[in-house]
Length: 294
Image 1 (tube, rainbow, N blue to C red):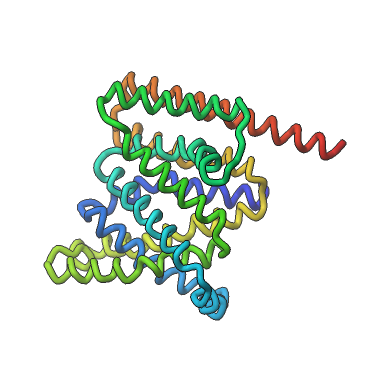
Image 2 (spheres, rainbow, N blue to C red; image 1 turned 45 degrees about the vertical axis):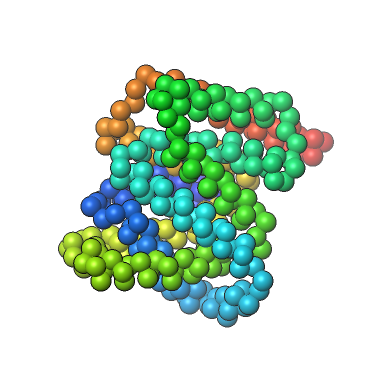
């Protein structure tokens, strides 16, 4: 197997099984899990930076006038992480997976709005279908699927910022977690002083899981960066559906979240949109390769 493909499957596979990991951390609150995730990510990334001899380059990064861009990226990342952790532990794994199913189409829409990209008719069709699927779920349940939309748009906007941001994946993620580090640490000290802290009070197993959240956060992102440099974006675009598919299966098969008839229809419309989008993307890439070859 191509090394880039292996890295991509490793990244999306790990993300796909995240619900199991966060369920193991119950009854720790989502906000405490988020804070630990940030703090231990900084610890792990610092070790990686030392091992790769990147500390000097990181100091140079901190002197550059790019902090505002990464402050916005860090805030979007925090919103995305908190929403996902809360959704998983509150029993909304299926809706969380929906967010990552529609994320590729949200990315296309954001490209139109912010990057002035022009879409062909076939690209508008899946976006319209996805919107119809979300509308159907909203009407059938009487409430907007806000978890899915928050995850899709926060990650989409985060990706948009990363597209224009100048740093590598490792330096960028390190800077983003450093920005979140002080607020996260202050929060953990505050809950510990109030006697509601989780670390050190729920047994060694929970402590290890909280600490390992840093590795679990950074490792798939590093795999993702390695894959992105080795394989075409069209291949990445297909493999990315591994994560929400695994999340969906975990929600239904392992945690028995209800997959009602309304959800079958709503998810089905969105899956149809993704099939159309992915098929046409592959055909477009194949035509481009053939025209280049000729």
